[in-house]
Amino acid sequence: MVYKLVWENLKHRPVRTLLSSLAIGLGVTMMLTLVGVSEGMFRDQEERTRGVGAHIIIRPSGSSAIGITPPNINERLVGWAAEQPHVQQATGVVIYPLGGVSTVHGVDFQELSRMSDGFTFFEGGPFRQTQEAIIDEYYAKEKKLHAGAMVKILNRDWRVAGVFRGGKLARVMLPKPILQDVTATTGKVSVIYVKLDDPSRTAEVIAHFKQTLVDYPIYSMDELASQFSVNSLPELKVFIRVVMTLSVLFGFLVVFLAMYTAILERTREIGILKALGAGQAYVLGILVRETVLMAVIGSFFGIGMSYGTKWLLGTFIPASFPQAIVYEWWPIASGITLFGALLGVLYPAIKAARQDALESLSYD
Amino acid sequence: MTEPIIGIRELRKTFRSGDVDVHALRGVDLAVERGEFLAIAGPSGSGKSTLFHILGGLTPPTSGTVLIDGQDLMKLSDSGRTNLRKKTVSFVFQKYNLLPTLTVGDNIEIARDIAHAKGPIDAQFRDVLEILGIHRKLDRKPRQLSGGEQQRVAIARAIVNHPAILLADEPTGNLDTENSSLVLDLMRSLNERIGQTILMITHNPEAAAFAHRIVQMRDGQLHAV
Ligand SMILES: Nc1ncnc2c1ncn2[C@@H]1O[C@H](COP(=O)(O)OP(=O)(O)O)[C@@H](O)[C@H]1O
Ligand SMILES: [Mg+2]
Image (cartoon, rainbow over all chains, first blue to last red; front, side, top):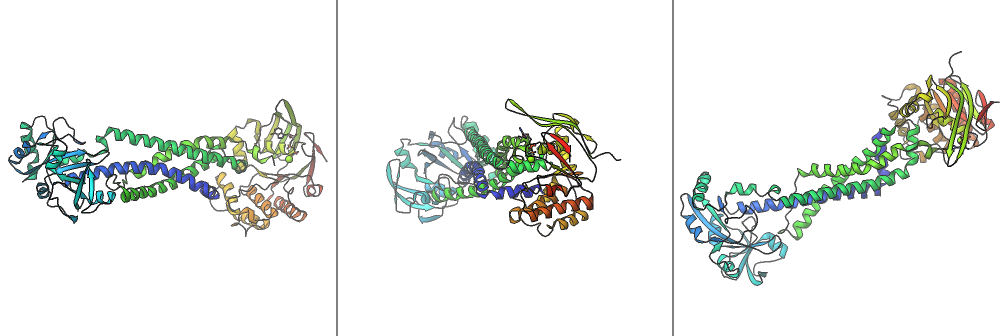
């Protein structure tokens, strides 16, 4: 029965209820979008790394598993690696940061294509000349590029030779020798990808590599993939926590204001309930239920709006911020917001519960 | 003689507003028998409403004894006085005081919910709804009803939990003559049919005439008429 009153109260002020719920939902959306973008970028990175088709990755000495590394592996190590037992193929890649989240990769296209079982081109094809680049579909969409167009990278103009299906190593690739030349890193690579004739021998081959390449971080593909998560980026964890705190604060403020005005205009109603024998807990319960209901509605809005941000990001900047929908975070984000909302209703609800029934009933 | 349902002795209530003391009740003595229909008349500001608020536990007395259905009001805690309103004492006000967002039926249901009443409405109360003439209007919102109808809903809500005492504070104060006599007729018939104890405040001598007995409040004291 009390839920009817709660529901009618919310319906009585539809605009306030709607706006409050939307504002509560914004907190949910903030969290879901941040987590979704983080997760989306990790998944995308993992997919592209797996797309190379390698089993083992050799990174420069002193580097961590993820993050951009300066090209300082001697390129001759690629040839050495290719000759080791059970190695089918090895290829070196140069990675150069472009600022922000984007990078450009210098590759030997023929080697990379063979290792990754071939590229699919939507437009054009592989680069044939030195001043050519290939880009993936997402980069093409974000930058509105097509085969034959010119693109400026590292202050030079490159012709887009082809647009390929994403999920292969990188979004933007240049011929390796020219990138080495432009960035003055001739004879060096950033990463060596190694493909084996028998994947079950991965651990064995890594152990063998480590005997010679003592200082080099060497990972199996699975080890590397497990690094693509929030846990490997403490800064991101802090950032997510900041956004969580903001959401709690947001829910708190919205509900505090909404409920505070609600009880001011409902002094008479509260007086009536008390005259009927409602105790403090009953009055408190009504306002808390209203808040929970509003937070639940807000969470639905928030989840809905996170699909909206996914669409926006996916439409306008798909290469930079691919957003995933992370279902596990639906209850977490909703719970955090509910917590903020309950903090917000606390003071108004206690004030209402303590209100003197006669204040509103006797003076008319 | 059975024990009176209300026994008041030397009841005083002093309000302190700012630096002045307002002596709203200055030694009230009253005994009300079970099943009685009592009218309380008297000029505005004489302390009638204050007496009702004390009886309903909405405000504590300053001194004196008040026994309601065997309970000593002075000894009741805050929650004890809340419980008093759930089961023992109920109010009808001049302003009908219905919850505007709820239907008539839900206004009655919420009173049952507050009093933890279980199960469906009993047959006797269905008859009461019919007597009150609102049994066909349970789905309406209060604003869709006339003042007289709203007051009859307020009466229904007040007695749904079978309170020992019904306190009606100027129940016809906002009603025209026709609706007033309807409401007064109904209160008397509730009193006669189900033995409802009723205390009614009224300015109107014609209204007071519906009661068994009339007492007069003057300057915070009750006098027999
Ligand atoms: N909460 C209050 N604070 C201060 N004075 C009050 C309060 N309630 C009533 N009074 C005063 O007590 C006196 C009696 O009021 P009331 O019981 O409402 O009279 P009646 O119902 O007979 O018109 C009045 O002088 C009124 O101003
Ligand atoms: Mg009065």
